[in-house]
Image (cartoon, rainbow, N blue to C red; front, side, top):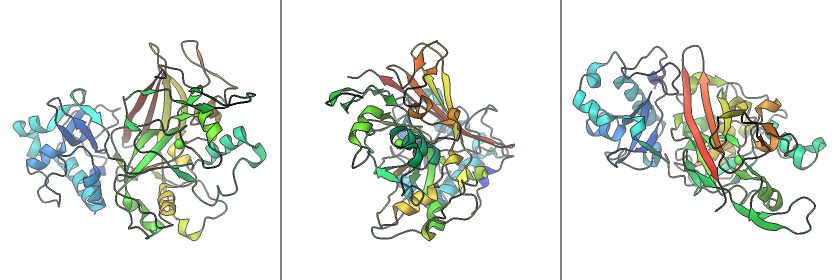
Length: 424
Ligand code: CA
C-alpha cells in the first residue's frame, strides 16, 4: 500500500505555519486530555489537535478494520498492535480528510467542532504503556568518547562493540512525557580520592540526547525475526532524554552495567512520528567495518536524516543551544537493534520502547551529553547569562528538538522538555 499521506504537494484546510513541525505530511499519533476531561488518542496538524476517537465515532474510518473503541483509550498500544497496514490506512485517511481539496469534513462545521482542538487547550500524556524499555549504546562516537574518558583512549571501544549493538534492559516505569519535571536523584557515589563511598544527592546529573522507537508485537517467545522484515514492526519514533547521574553510574556499573544512575527518569516527546512519515528522509548509515554477522547485514539506506538539538534553559533566563547532532550518526540501525534483540528468541511486544543510546556526532559541538561536551567537567560550557555548566544545575530545563528537512517538506518531533528540580 502506498503512503499517500506523504504527498509533498498536499495542503491542509487547517492553517499551518511554514516552520511548523506538524504539516499535513507528518500526521503523528499521541494521547491527550481535552478541556472536557476526556482522554483520547489523537493526531496533530499545525496548532490543532485532532480527536481520532471522535472521527471514528462519526464514521470517518468505517471501511478500515479497526476495533470500535480503539481510539477511545488512554494509550496507543491496541492501535499499534493492529499492525503496519492499518497504521498506514489510518494515516492516509487523516491526510485525505484534512486535504484542502476534500470538502467532506471541511464543510461540516458541527463535526469539525467535535473533532478539532486548539493545542493550547489540551494536555499531552504518555502515548504508550511502555511494557519494556531497552537502551542501546549505538553511537560509535559516544562509545569512543566515554571509553576514552572512563578507561583507556587506546582501547576506547570494548572488543564486542563492533560486532553487536550493545544494550541493557532499562526501567519503563520512570519514562515520562515532556513537561513533567523531575528531581535530582539520591544515590551512592565514590568521590575522586575519597576512601569510602557516600550517599546523597547526585552531583553530576546529565542529559543523554537520544531517540527511541516504539514497536508493535514482533515475535512469539522463542522466534527470531529476519533483518529485512524488522522495520515492519517499528511504529514510530520520539525524542528521548535519558537522564543520567554520572557519579552514581561510575560507582555502580561494574560488573552488571547501568542501574540506579539511569533509572530515575527518562523524558520523551509526546507525539510519535511514524516511520512512514520519515520515509523521505532515508539516508545511508555509517559503513560497518568489520562486516557484521549475516543476521545483521543490510543493504540500502537504513538510517534517517534527523537533525537534533539540545538546549539548556536556566531559571528566568534564555535557552542556550549546547549541541547539534543527527540521528544518521548511529553506527547500528534500528533494524539491526531490533533483529539483534530478538536473535535469542526474546519476545518484543506492542508498546515496547528502544532507546538509541546517546547520539554523538564527530565534532565536539555535536556530542550528545554534558559528560562529553564538558569532557568530564574539564571544559565548562559558558551560557548567555554568564554562568557555566559542567553538568545540569537545579532548576535548569533541558529541551530537545528534532527535525527533518528537504526541499519539499519539514517534519518535526515537537519538544522533549523537562526541568531538573532540587533533590527531595
Ligand atoms: Ca542512554
